[in-house]
Image (cartoon, rainbow, N blue to C red; front, side):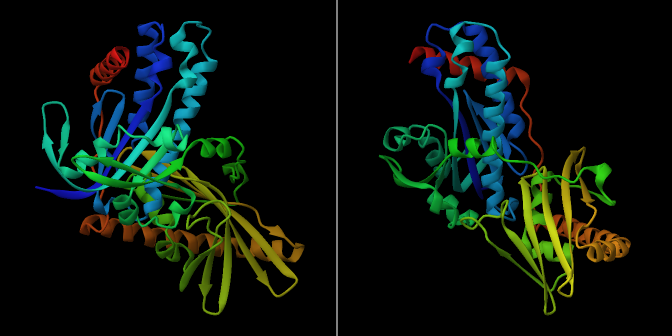
Length: 391
């Protein structure tokens, strides 16, 4: 039966230089490690269909994402992990063979499309078939690098942008189009991933350490971190966590929730600002709660919410810092801390029940985790190296 959803391809590039006179054994080991990393980073709700040489083909049912931004962040996280792995591989080897010396020439590109597909169970994998699947595969052969100069990128089709609701995001992307005889014109929005890596290497971390917290909130939810992250960060659901009447988000960058954005919680006529200090998708986020009692009694509390994958789901931990601000403000905040803790525990439990209900009713989808046997990774690396060598 045909389904609608997202089709994603992650493809490693750069083999011309990588194979130039290189030792195939070292090349195969490096490629297997990088394919393994892509498999590990292809997180739920993405489900791996199969490997196609050095490319990982995956899909996600339409109701898998509560926020389109989550798809973007899965891809961006994967690229950051890829660059970190590539850097470690280069630094940790003293081998002078071309395969090891050319590791920095390897890079990564992604293609995201939305449409209809049919799942066919094969002996060792699940095959995706359909016209939209063909569109996604056609994109592997493109002119993006030649026409834009971008080597590492994520290319979203018009259909994917509309389905994910990320129209504002593409303001920072480059428009591009490809023409295929059997498909026609495909309009793309291309995100250059190199600046992402450069920004990431300079970002500071803001995190409330467990031993510095005045209290800790803990719960477990039977869903993977990306989905739980969606519930804890999407404004409509954060209203539950803040016990507010309504919530807006200010200072977003191109429509994105990120470091620097501000959740504004309305409690009647009172508005409480919660600036985001650090934003590490699916790992943790840190925000500040700004409070006051009159003009002179002010305080702020820093709160880190962390998402830890466990068997069968996610453990969510909340760490609340000691209050900062005026002396009176700090003292008042300390007196209110126990009440704030009880309130926070009740709100987290309320959101947990909402998540459970929406999983049961199908409002949210939790696809089964996917895995790829080691022998398939080896076969994919060997096939990719053979094809690159033939070219």
